[in-house]
Image (cartoon, rainbow, N blue to C red; front, side):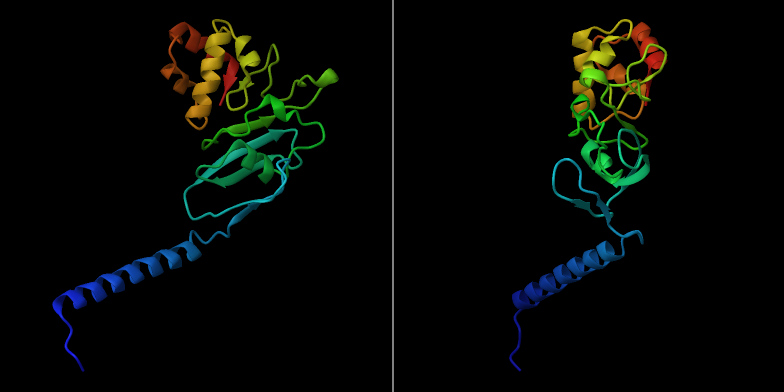
Length: 195
């Protein structure tokens, strides 16, 4: 048997370690947390959405105009569209244009799909703009935010942009990061918004 050089031994050792690492990751991904991968139902986007449960998970409440409203676990990085699909997709009365389906969802967030009312306007579902009810922070539109005292159209747009860029908001207190929102405005927001 020919004798191996020191560099050959190092190369073979590195390959063996790499194979062990890849094998361990594959085994860990297969066993995961004991939960099978989550497959979402086909939504209005056309195809079926499938994602793995190998990462962390988020718990979101999906309500409004969906086929199967409820509380669902989604993987880290999931989008509003994924949450809607997980709840069976939008029903026939859904007004999908009123929400940002590309926004990332945050743990504990409520995703509310508004219902289409007369002439295509949103109906007063939980989380939509009604005079006496709170507005869902995860689904609020610029127009809904503009109804809050101390919020104008520019600040309302800044809130929606911040929510979309940060992947969703899990509490009203996060809005303190937005320029133009002071203590008095934060009080108005706390009174009119729900996470």
